[in-house]
Length: 303
Ligand code: BDR
Ligand code: CA
Image (tube, rainbow, N blue to C red):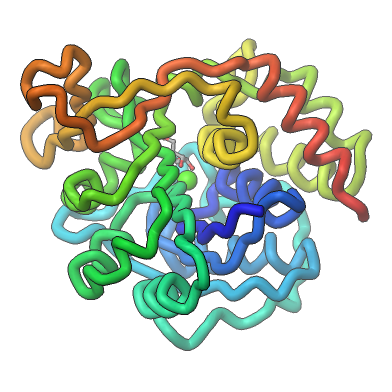
């Protein structure tokens, strides 16, 4: 099993990623930390607790950064709704979040682990940047960071920038310069592996988890005839099926000001950074395998 921590901003696709991480027996989800992103952090924390409660788990949840390091906060409620996770009546008797902050919880969990842990951020990287500045010793205890965010091609917030990196570009720059191995799971693959409407219609026929996912996914504001992007779920898919995703080693720089703020610039030719690399960048994905896997993961969940 792979020990992971998810740092997340649920968010519809975050909720789906949490669902897979909680239920797949090959993944051991030790901790969930939250960050402002799709909606404010008080809401993303409640949404994370809703998913943990839905599956009757006792995985700890710690609330994190309320806003980016320097930039003004802009949410994505127009895509994910005012609550961030609309469309399903979750239980209301939610567990309580940890008393400590996300940064403290991350530090404690990483340092207490008997093996290097994998970090899976699916929101902006503010908590991770704060963690690395406050506790640099954690870096050598992290196996890798499998991060949703960025793009080598087009953005989805601006033409240049993907939402998670756009939200806190300064944090992204700190993370990419940290020296910790990073897998960039960006729009280049997440916009390709759309969950098809056929897959979405199958979900409620599977079980209650499938119904829950269906009901929130159909509220995603970013819906096309070809399907709906499940961006964050691609991180978990990568952990379980790396053979279905093609990566290329390169150096990623993050633009932290100007019109292209939040853009991830990949040194595709390897010329500028002299062949030095700081990330495995996802460049292609088997979309059919992703859809099949998504359905099978949900089908395997016991009500
Ligand atoms: C990312 O932005 C958020 O809205 C999604 O949850 C995902 O993490 C995609 O750009
Ligand atoms: Ca997210």
